[in-house]
Amino acid sequence: MEPSLLNTQIVFASSAPFIFSKPKVGDIVVFKVDDRIYIKRVKEIKNQRFSLNGDNKKDSLDSKEIGWINKEDIIGKVIYKI
Image 1: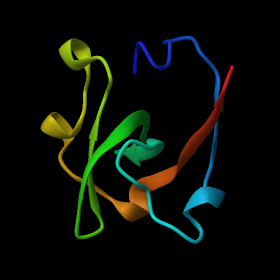
Image 2: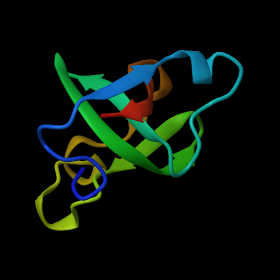
Image 3: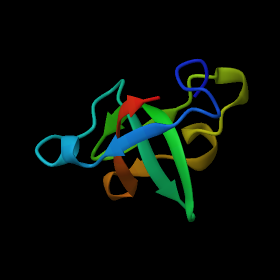
């Protein structure tokens, strides 16, 4: 997610923002695929499925490789970074 988030940076994510609303384009979210945790930005939304991209376009594993993400795979929204 560089340059927005550095590789060693600590973030705090919460599921609370998604209790009454769904993720929006531009949100940075934490999600799980195949027992791995990722942090990416929501690029597009279609039928409760999300296309997620990293900010580092040259070196980012994102929806181009892992496909669209279901809403239930999203753990939370990044709400604070140190």
